[in-house]
Structures are given as C-alpha cells and as structure tokens.
Image 1: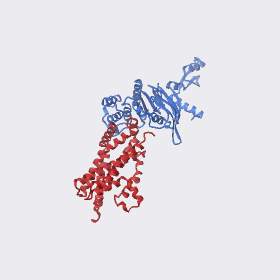
Image 2: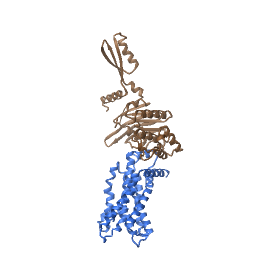
Image 3: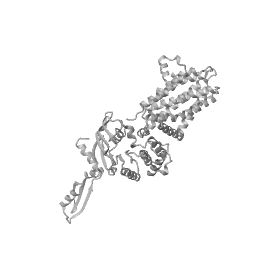
Image 4: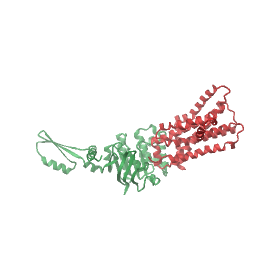
Length: 245
Length: 286
C-alpha cells in the first residue's frame, strides 16, 4: 500500500510540473464545451439540445481521461521507467493502484470544472442534489476511463499504438450507447455492443438524474455496473501488465 | 563464490536467436565486462539476469536466486541501470533518486540520497529537472538510482555510451571503488578500451560467447610485429606478445652495427578482438 502512495505522489508531482499536460486535460475540455455551445446555438428552438449537454460533457471527460492516461503509461514503457520500477521493487498492483490514485485528483478537477462550465454556459437550472449526483457520475466515469487507459496501455508498445483503440472503443461509444440517439432503434447486436461500453451506463444515469421525478433507486444498478467496471478493469490490467518480455 | 551462474541460457525472438546456449560464471566482487557490438546479445543477457526477460531455455542464478521465481528476494539485492536513462524528465535528480529509493524501502532515505548525490558529484544540480541535464549527467543520475539501496550486484548496460572521456574516466573510478567495497559489477560495453578496465571480460557476438579472459590474457593473445632495418633493408617478423619470444627473435639478428632501427608494433585490444572474431569465422563457429 505504501508503494501505491509513493507512485501516486510521484504522478501528482509530475502532473503539477507538466503544465502542457495539465492545460490539455483541464482547459481542453472547457474549450470543447464552448465549441459545443456555439454549435447548439445554431439549432432551431424546437430542438431540445440541453438534454444532450451533460451526456456529451461526460463523453468528453471519458475520451480525454482515457487517451491521456493510456499515452502516459505507454510513455513509462518506452522511456524504460516501467521496467525500472518493476525491477526496482514496485509491484504491478502498486503501479496500477498508484496511477489510479494519482489521477483521482485530476479526474475530480476535470469533472468539477466541466460540470460547472456546462451549467453556467447552457444556463441549466438544477438543484444542488442533482448537481452533486451529476458530478458523481462524471467523476466515476473519469475513473473508469483512467482504468481503461491503463488496461489498453498494456497492449501498446509505443504511443502511436494507442490510437487504433480510439475507433475501436471510443467512437462506438458515440453512436451505440444512447449518447445522441436512443438505443431502442438500433439492431439488437448493436445494442449488445453499446451495453458493453461504460459510457452507456453513465449516459443512462445522467438521463435519469435530470428528470424531475428522479429517485436514486432508479439508477442503483447502473451505478453498480459503472463501479464494477473499475474493479473489472483493475483486475484485467493487473493480469495483462507484463513484467517480462 | 560466484555472484552469477548461467547454464545453457537460450533466448529466441521469433526465429532469431539472441542468446545461444550461453554458459558463464561471474565471481563475487569483480568488475565483469560484457564486450560486443550492437546486437550481440548484451542487453538480452542483462535483462535475463535482472528478471525482465523470460528465456526459452537454460538456468540462471544470481546470488543463488532464480531471477523469475525469486524475484522479490533478488530485486532487493540488485541494482539495474538500463541503456536509456529511464528517468522522469519532469522530476528533479533528487526526486528521481528518492522515488526509486522508496521502491526499495531504503532506511534513512533522506540521508542516503544526499550521500549518493555527493558521491556522484550531483549535489549542486540536485534540484534541477532531469530534462535540463546533459546525456552524461542523466547517466550519473541513473547510476545513483541503481545504487541507492546498496545492492550486492549492479547491472550496468552500456553506462558510458555517449559519455565524454572525462566523465567516462570518473565513472570507471566509481565502478572500481564499488568493486573494492565488495559489490559485483556486471557491465556491458561496445567500447574495446573499457575491456581493459574490467577484471574479466566475455566477448559476445551474435548471442555466442567467443572468449572469456582477463584483459591481461586477452592482450597476450595478440601478436607483435618486429620491424628491423639492416643496411636500409627492412625485415618484418610476427611474434607472440611475450618477452621470451621477442628475446628469441632478437637473438637471430644479434647486435649488428648495421642494424639502424628496431621497431615493435603490438596489437591493441581492438586488433586482438577482431582476430578472435576472424578465427571463429574461419572455424565456422559464427
């Protein structure tokens, strides 16, 4: 456990020192949401674009957390620091745990800043309880994305190898998870794929939360599945992170 | 006692053999050199010894332990300096060393970090980010990371590659100091002059061991060309690099007043190693 905190501390010190990375992960999503606002302003008034805003924000956080974490961990491999950590006495679980813990802080900041801007920019009027619940979902999704990034990084030997996973994992999330259109109209096989992707559960919860009749019990299962992704991906990553060539 | 024992170690990358039934023994407390060109199997061998590579066949014992089965026991006792610096560029030298020290649960880490920074003459730059360092300085920080936990054996993969001559000399003084304190140094290099600084050298090529010698014995394998000029006529004879052979050869000519010059030209370490490679190629072993 001590080693996990040591790695998490190092990740935080690195994040603090890497202004370009911090800007990309914190300011990047805010700029994209502003562009979204410009796009939505062009829609005719009868289109209910507001209901799409929070799910799309969640997707932006999901995408950026995944890609940045995967690339940073692949960098560890290409720089040789991952091998050195393992030979230097750090265990696989402490490396994965340390990275996850290190990104907890970043994920929290990302979720909070994105949600605050979206509510302000789109003039959304949610009560405090709804805002807290929305924050929880986006934050949880960010953690899942970090875990997904760690897992995918085990299949990449260099940064460029992460890119093919964008069309495989991230882009289907846009079309098949109910983010833009409801899943009911999709073929069954496409619905099955959509239900395998974590964004589907985050979108489900968000769509429920913003309904005035929302009760926490309506989304317990989806919350459970989203949390399950964290442990499932943690397990998979620890199985696939190789110690030897 | 041997610090390292390797028997029939074999590793293939696909169909390409990186190590071919290699057997080797490294005595404790020595500087053991692994000499060979790029692609000869030096890094592969080191990776097999530190437990970051799974060989296809053969046995490896480092300090009596199996690098894969006894990895947790072994990792506390070995230091590893990879070929690339393998450091965090956005951390300072001090934080890099401290981080790897924390991985090894080093007691009195703060004091140990200061000591090793001073040992490697890095104290004045300790708080600078590693990305601002020259290649040679990064190598020094990397060495500190490998030594922070007082390992019994240190694996150094080309530690002086792309390092200026002054720093190279300093590094070798440091390696000798460590060996004198009982640490076994297993060092790979492709620079032939460094072979002379080791206690024993293994010459590798294409994953095969060509020779295992002390540098002195290696030099004895060389030839000396004796060039004698008598009445402006030059004669050359090739003799073994021993004083006895030289004396015998000189006797043939006596101390003739017409001898105007005697020149001796001995093979250097590069010539000797090349001649070993050529011999093996002729024997069809390569």
